[in-house]
Every structure is written in structure tokens, then in C-alpha cells.
Image (cartoon, rainbow, N blue to C red; front, top):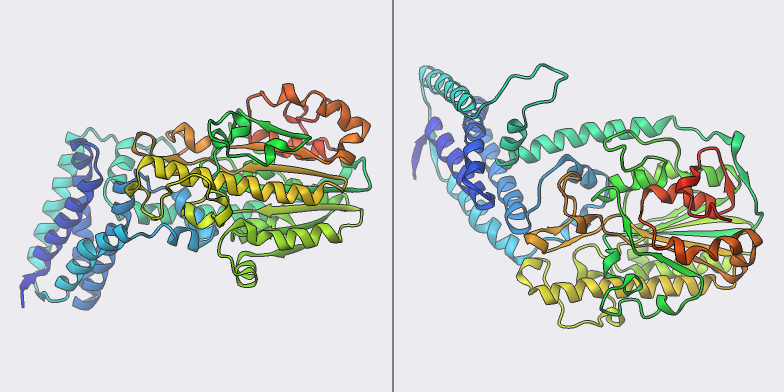
Amino acid sequence: MLKLNAILLSFVISFYILLLNTVAYHSIKDLYYAIPIAILFFILLLIFRIFGKFVFKIVIATFILFASIVIFFKWRYNVTITSDIILSGLINDKSLTSEMASVSLVIWVIFTALIPIVLLFKVKIYKNSFKQYFQYGIGSILLVLFLMYLQGYKYRAKGQIRDYKTIYALENFSPIDLFFAYKKAKKDLKILKSDYKNIKVDKSSLVSKYKDSLIVVVIGETSRGDRFSLNGYKKNTNPNLSKLENLYSFKNAKSCDTLTVNSMHYIFTKRECKEFNSAPKGVAFTREFKALGYKIHLYTLQTLNAFYNYLGYDKMVGKYRIINEQKVGTKDIALLPYIKKDIENYKGGKELLIIHTLGSHQTYIDRLANSDKQFKPICHTADVKKCPKSELDNTFDDTIIAVDNFLTETINMLKNKNAMLVYFSDHGESLGENGVYFHGAPVKTAPKEQFNVPIIFWFSNEYKSKEEYNSFTQNFNYLKDKNITHDYLYHSILGCSGIKSKDIKENLNLCKGK
């Protein structure tokens, strides 16, 4: 059995994790800034030795495992670990993240984490003297301070903008970046719940013009607007939607964020893209519908329960019930039986139907029914970087075919109703452009593909025949070329539903022409 003292073992582990991090580095500068964090990590390990040999090994094993997993995604897909991504995981469905597991990830974890952990538990640790701990601790701190001096760190008082080098250093040493992001995400979640807790509807200015209307809002997931042939894409990804009357697609649409949990605030409230990092602004439009007597039914394949509670629904059918009852996996077609029953039961009155899909979320092939697989060959693995670009594109484009089929079937159910349908995606997706994959990149540095979304409005003939909407839709062919963002959704969903409110900004209301 190998024998090491705690100081030497801590050094070996710190050096190993630093070495592992270099796999994800883009330049020697990344390593240069990560070294002080690695030294502080060494000191942290020495502190954990106080709690005994077994706890010491468990802590080290945990660090190695988390480092291995995080570094894989940073290296393989150019993913940056942010608090927004962690917040999305805390609120959203964990199984969406688990679907991104691949054979490559498993092999990587076995060799970079599990084997080192097995070896770790075979090491016999013997004690160092207090003097040695003190000497190495003080020496390490002095070395960190010297390196920070060389790197040009400057002290910033509380309340001032911190030195960017600190963030840069933390981001380049996993799993420390993960733990810092998790800490901030927990704080953000607490603030989020607090912000939503006491929001109330101001009914004084709310007016609804119509006694009977069925409004359907479909929230897409990860689908890109530039992959819709409705918007000029070279492949025919919308063979069904393109044949429908009274359907208008905005080809120049952008999301405000790159993550679902953040985008939902822009979509449902008055918060605008320019109000980055601000608190939720006012009530969700669903609360205003509810104040006007609308019944709100929610069918979802996601688990944003903390946010859904804020919407004030009357009825919700969630992901796990749908999966257990429909037996088709996590495909959007699982939602159709519930939508069909709801629409068939609609005999008039006011109803708002919210449908939250999985759309084009990775793993892409898991979103496809056989009828959706139109472009071949396709990518069958969760490790999309293994697939040729043509296969990855085909698979993602097939998810747009699935969206086309889903929306068309839903619209066909609505044709004989006094109904309006609005569809949009929460954010876009990187598909290997410049080596970047998936979504969730920081808003200030995210590539344009992660903001590219579809926004579509459809009206039934009965709905369109109303004098107010007839004058509006006559101008839609002009309006659909307009550059719009998620900012427009709150105001337009209310405005196009015949609702008047002091909260509606007419410059963001696509139906202001009616």
C-alpha cells in the first residue's frame, strides 16, 4: 500500500486537478490565472484533513468527481459554468440534464475520476506535524499573494466592480467554478421566490373586449427560427405550417436570454431585454387573463414548478403524469391527447391554454417520432461532437419537423373555434458553430445562434373575422419582417387577445393596428 503524508497527497491532488483543467484551456493564459486558485485549493484540502482521514478522502473524491464531469462539458462543448445554468438545474427538470450523458462522458469519468478515486482509497495517510502544516500554509498564502501581484490584481472595496481576473481565475479551475456558481444560484433562487411572492394584479385598467375566446400559448424549447423554412431556411422544415391560412411567422426574432428559466421572465412579464439582471417586473400576463375571468390550463413536459406557481393556473398536468400515461417518452406528441380533450371540451367562454414543450432540446433524437425523421442520416448519440456536422444538422432540423407536425395538429383542432395561437421558443442553440454547442452561454458573450428563435401567430377564421382583427391581420405581411424580441410577447399576447391595460406598451403591441 502506498504511503503519503497529507501535505504531499494534497499537493498531488491539486496538481492533478489543475492538470485535468488544462484540457479545457484555450491558451496558456488560462493556466497562468488558474495557478493561484489551485494553490488555495491545496490549502483548502489541508483544512479538511482536520476532520479525519476518511472525511479527507471523501472530500477529495468528491472534488475529483465533480471536476471530471464539469471539465468534460467545458472541453467537449465549450460550455461556461455559470450561476444561470445551475439555477436552471435547480428549478428545471434534472432529467433534461441527464439526457446529455453519453458513452464518451462515462469513459472520461472512469479514467479521470473513478480510477484515481480507487487509487486514492488505497493510499495510507500518515500525519504531518503542526509546524509543517503552518509552514506550508503560510508559504502557500505568500505564493498566492505574489502571483496575484504579478498578475496585476487590484483591491476593490465592497460595492465596487470586482477585478475581472478573480472571475477569470475561478472559471478556469473546476470544480471551484461549479461551487461558486451553485452558491450564487441558491441565492438567486431565494430572491426569485421572494420577488414573486407578493406581486398582485392591478385590475383598475383591465378591460376585455370579448366574452368568448380560446387563447393558446405554446412555449417552444431550444428551436431556432433560422431553421424554419417559413423564415427562408433552405430545407423544407415546415411542410404543414406553410400551407395554413392566417399564420404569420416573424423571421427576425431574438430571445433576451439563452436559458429557459431566465427567458420565462421576459416572456411572461414586462421585463425587457435591456433590463438585464433586473428583478421580475410586475405580474405575469396569465394573472391578468385570470383577473378577467379566463380559465388557465397548463400542460407541460418541463418541471419549472417554482415559476408555474407564479402563473396562477387553474389546472396543471405535469411532465411525469404525461410520460406515465402516454408511454411515448419525452416527445411533444405526448401532450396532444390532453390538448385535444381540452379543446373538445371548450364550448365557449374565456380560456387560456399554456403548453410547454421540449421542442428541440438535446438529446435531439429523443424528441423525434418516426414520422419526424425526414432528413437522414441523423445523429444517434448524446455526444453530438462525435457526429458529422451534416448529421447533427439533420437531427436538429428533424426536431423542427416535429415542431411543425405538433403545431399543425394543434391548429387543426382549433380551426372551428374562436381561437388564437401564439408559438415561440425560449432561446436558440449552438450547433457546433465556432466549436460551440448547446445553449446557456453568458448573455454578454453568447453567440447569435443562442438568441435565434421563432415567433409565430395564427388566427382562426372566426377570430380573424372580427372587425378589429381583420384590420390588424391585413398588415401582418408587413409586420412579420419587423425585428422583434421577447419584449413584444407580453404586450402582444394581451393586445391580440382584445385586452386593454395600462401596462401594455403600444410600441411593443403587434396588434396595435387593430
